[in-house]
Length: 478
Picture (cartoon, one colour):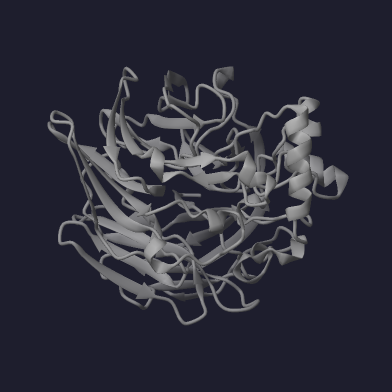
């Protein structure tokens, strides 16, 4: 999360208001049920496998997510927990699997380990201004959001700070990514790897100018082009997209509010009167063209592509920013306000925009076949927002199919792994963590992406439950 800068009088007033607003941390819904953290790191081999692991799935499914190491300091949000990576390694030839989990040991995590308690505030509170005055971080880089594999290295990501390198086999943290000293500060949790060139495109947003920066790494991890993108104000941008020639940014009116923070409602505000825009940034020059769109809130994009006249963006859009969900005052959005797959089409030559919904509300965390990033896509896979199952979207036929887990089970994001030599876009498998009710051990489900059948082709029973988390990936051969 970007850092805040306050003068002393403003700081005093905000702290006074914040103290009045704080409930006990035990009131947080993000420490109970499917969100409840697990204790300790474990490793276990020769897990029970039901069904048959497909032959091409020799490697590891890895998923990042929050798992607080210590009792939180004040109000707690799901986004605050320390990053814990869960790994399920599959060995089809041996008909077996193994599991391990480990914390991402950032500097803040290690500092709290030495202290034996939480030292940093979370998303719902002001940053630690005393620490900031001493030149230290006001918020902790929790490295808890997503994972990236690039130039042979695994990165744990958190959009407010630098990535952390992790050994994909052992999950040992190997330190912070320094980018040869030329990029510091915020780094998106959703960078994009161009499947043609291997180039990584990334960005960072902040509360001071430049509000938005963009950069590239070549296929060997060397920093390339760096651009500053002009914005009228700081806004929250969680994700973006790329095409062959453009990076596609969503400048939506999800802004920052210190007044909201002082009232204990979190730092974000929704200001639809400011309007919405989509920017096409040339990946080579940084030149930006903006298109006015309906104000809406987008956390995740699926994909984007271009032809001679248009750029198409597919994303999960909400009609407004979910401030209640982010400030902890509500965890259930009305169905009509939940994300839905949405199509934007920007005319490069005529400057016109067309936009339309592609599905009913109620799903997010879209995934696709990664080697089609930046190219026309037919199939998308999303997670139901109440965690009860998944959706498969056929963007060409404009149809949606649903796959439901048993009642009371909680599902995670589904990662698509293509079958080598497959001739169809959806020829492959979906991997996802699934959690039965209570303290039952979690499962890894392997599902046929083409048939989208209710019965998984394989299930791996894990040693213990796995808390709800965020984003994952597949690493072959690990």
